[in-house]
Length: 170
Image 1 (cartoon, one colour):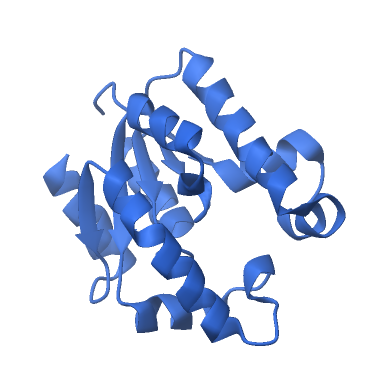
Image 2 (spheres, rainbow, N blue to C red; image 1 turned 135 degrees about the horizontal axis):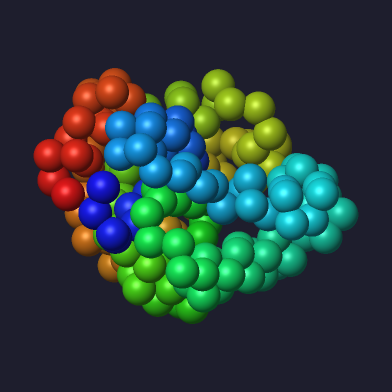
């Protein structure tokens, strides 16, 4: 493994968490996840955080966790991030300074189908989930592009093929 962390960004349903775990196993390094780090830090699930403290507090916690990673001396890890982590300019700056940022992208249809299969998506627990999904995605696409070093289209790729593509590119 290189001494440069790999950071996975992308919209909900892009496979960041699953791919991050498989990639870290291949690279024989730690797999970290910003959502898991926030849960460990607060003792609350992401859903509970959204319900009790709101999205703004959750976003602040994302920045805190990134700051802690940035300040640590840890150099070999794969970091899977939450889909909205790029909303903050401060987060985008930290992500770029942490390591190689890879945007896992896919077609909107594939992302929505994958996201719907996963429980605990607070931002999709609304009356019109597809409309909300499309609005969030449109708002974030340019931020993913601005933040990443590499983009991988996972629309037609399995997790293992996505991991191979990342290994081939880094």
